[in-house]
Image 1 (tube, rainbow, N blue to C red):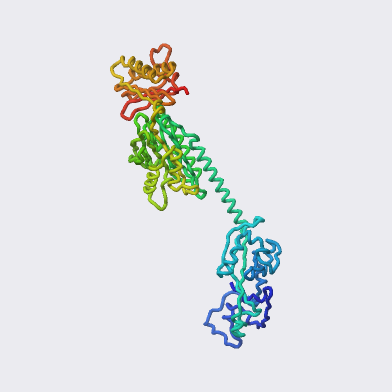
Image 2 (image 1 turned 180 degrees about the vertical axis):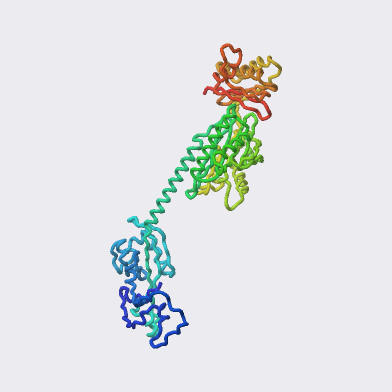
Amino acid sequence: MNFTRWSARLPGTQRRAAARDDRSAVPAARAEYARPEGSPAPPDDASPAPSGPAPAEALPGPALDDLSAREILGRLPAPVALLHGADHRVAYVNDAYEAAFGPRPSGVPAAEALPELAQLSVLPLLDQVLRSGTARTVKSRRTAEGGSYTVTCTPVAAWDSAEEKGDKEDKGPDKADAKKEGGVLVYAADVTDHAEAAERLRTSERRHRETAVTLQRSLLPQELEQPDDLRIAATYQPGGTDAAVGGDWYDVITLGAGRTALVIGDVMGRGVRAAAVMGQLRTAVRAYARLDLPPHEVIQLLDILAAEIDASQIATCVYAVHDPNEGQLVYASAGHLPILVCDEDGTVHRAADPTGPPLGTGGWVHTSGTIALPPGSTAVLYTDGLVERRSEDIDEGVASLARALSGAKGSPQVVCDRLIRSLGVTAEHDDDVAVLVVQHPARTGPNAELFHNAALDLLGGIEAAPRARAFATGVLTSWRFPVELRDLGVLATSELVANSLQHGTPPMRLGLRRTDRRLIIEVTDGDDHLPRRRQAEPADEAGRGISIIASIATSWGSRRTPGGGKAVWCEFALPR
């Protein structure tokens, strides 16, 4: 931007008055159509006469050379300051500048006279603009008074001479080569309204995000259930501030008889809606888990429910059940990422199929699979936010997780934190992350003495009942239980065996299990009709077995076994 033509009216310069005739004031755009005086008029067919009333006679406007820089800059509604020299002395500020920031003295360096430029981060740019000759802009900076401005600094060239450039050229090379002295024109646009609107929008988005995060966290387990045979930890981390909260979730559900259900899922979508759908699915999983159904049947029910909740909302989920007597996870997956299991020696196994489509798609018959979880091993269930990256295939992310899991040692919470760090998940991560770490500890020494198993095949007819009572008496005595607890255990064993002998079919088996917190008694048989508790009439000679068990035991339940048949169990809490 060159102010040579306007420099005559800047402070310290003179303006040369130039005499111009009336014709010189005609704008160039109209001058080319002006007809010299005395020239013949164009023929009639040269161009058609314009229709309509004759235009009013145009008045001559001022030429650009007639306008001074002070007149132009003074009428601008935006604050403008002109700085001169290497130390950026104030040469001029317009009325809008003084109205915004107050009167400013001339001839004083900008660092002293214009403190608002420091607040707007403009002072460091002045030397850059003057040195490079390139304009610089800072956007939406706030002053101490609360106003916001976007400021553009433009280099300005001016001559030391009081004469214009044309006169320098006319007076010879000495004048033409006169030394130039640079300056900077500072133009500030008031964007306070825009900045306040943007801040209100950011505040609204922040509150919406905080609401979604609060809802999400309130729907997740506030405290994980800790089974007797497993050690479990979980981590949920919402996406960064630029990413809306998703629908990642997890849960741990104790099923009874030492069995534990592990769940993790991801609802596609963002915000409160995804969190609300997640909450409904988590509640449904807990309800279905109480039925003690096989994993694939739970997933099948969730598939139907997800379509009823919102047909446009897709979710993935994996549901796994751990049975300490079998040492494995039985699982079913609806479009979710595979479970990883790390053995005690660091070998990592990846759960294979079966994996069906996501929940809510319908038309798919889900099946269950198994993966070993021996003592000393660690299983990891996770959502795609942990392993999915835009720059690589998701299988590469799963492989990276497997390598990190192979070297992760320590408690479940320590393993969680190490996996998060190893996969590069930070507070600004662009997606939600949920991780569930399950350890099956290998118990040795005195700790192992707290865990015992004993089993008896129930052969023959009614004589199996007294053998079962004798077996239970001997086992519970050897486990050094108090007499009262031993008697209750023998009574529960008698009622469960009698119920199986009357209503079940062979093969029948009695199992006793002791953990550090409870005594578990379980009877299995080949009939798949589950018992139910009912109110027996006073004259009835039978039908009170389940009621007796429910009265004396801490909890009881029944389930169908995978190979056909059923298992009926009860638990007694051990004294501390």
